[in-house]
Image (tube, rainbow, N blue to C red; front, top):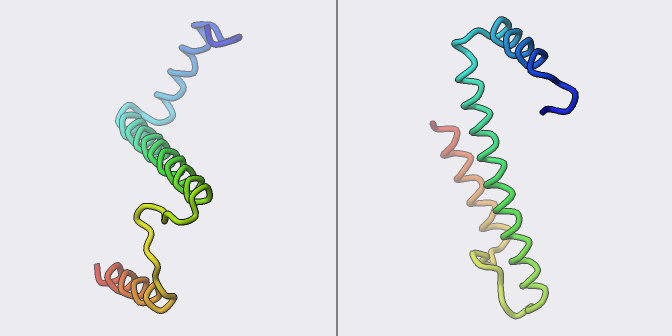
Length: 90
């Protein structure tokens, strides 16, 4: 079933996990694990869409990547400073 692990070994592992972590903490750990997996999947999808956009931009240099705007370094710096100030106020 799980390679060389039989049902008895799996049962021992489950009992040890219950003893070590307790029945109260396991649902929270599983929720955190699921949240992490969902974030990971979302980032993979975003990366794939960015790669496709960059590929199409290289193929057609006249088109700009969706959502991309030409900004000067000064404008970008101002936006960063505003974002940092806003985050530190909270």
